[in-house]
Image (cartoon, rainbow, N blue to C red; front, side, top):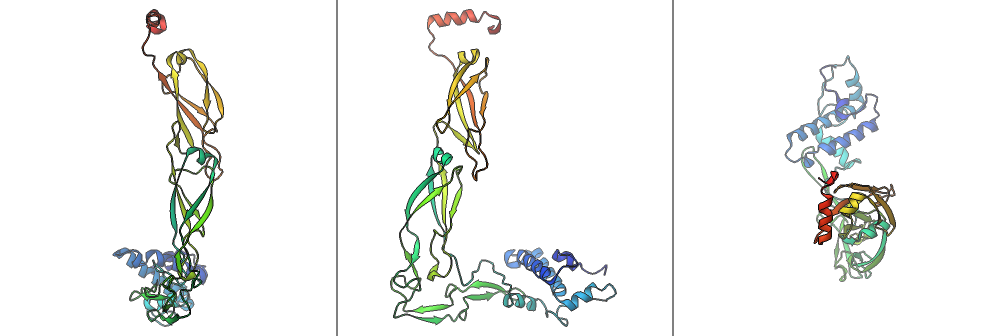
Length: 351
């Protein structure tokens, strides 16, 4: 047993794992290492074969008992008695017996495509949340044929490519991949003399008006998804796509947003920074705060106003408002001011 491959370790399961656990582990790993997902990778191909070998043994009760017996002279032999006859058999089982390796293909029921739009919002709207009415033109079911793609002169003919299943299988050897039939698009039939309004697709360009609720705390670059407001699936055969709203922010004159914090400048005359003072600060939502400026406040000093920033998206608290002191130097001094400053320069703290 010591020289044997550890099939349990290869599949990542315990020795007392059920057949269902083993099957789930095999499916997960085989999808990860499938050569069609790892084009040209020798490592993926080797891993894939090793996983299949482990499953051929552990997925068969008789072979598993023999493998688990430390006194057995078990030796792996793809194509031996019982279980699967080799890699081809394994993947034939999965593609026709409940497991489909579906990489980029489709199923008979598809989802309509998404529609993406962009909203440019002010910082104020992002703080409070807002509602927006929009008109757009999604693909909707054809009213003339009810989405079937057929009228009174139409008839269905079974697709010869997929035999009416809507799927075709590609690959060779032990690789079997299910894909949407390219001829019928997954519906399993071809329409002769299709509906003239939708050309047999069952969908046409329509018009829709909706009011969207945009929650508070949204931010620049966020994509909001509204389920079922996108394009209809062809022939009504599946779910409707989604409406994706991409959020961008209009630049603000006073505030700069960094995460959930709002940064702004506090323009302060030098004399007030030297002597100290009290100033009023207006928040983004119009509230007035009083801030104390200490004596000798230096240029670049930051004042933090906790809880006066942006609401965190998803109702997870509120950010801060942070003001940075920018000293304003006096200009065009009159003669009296110049004389006063000259006298002041003689004092201890201004030498």
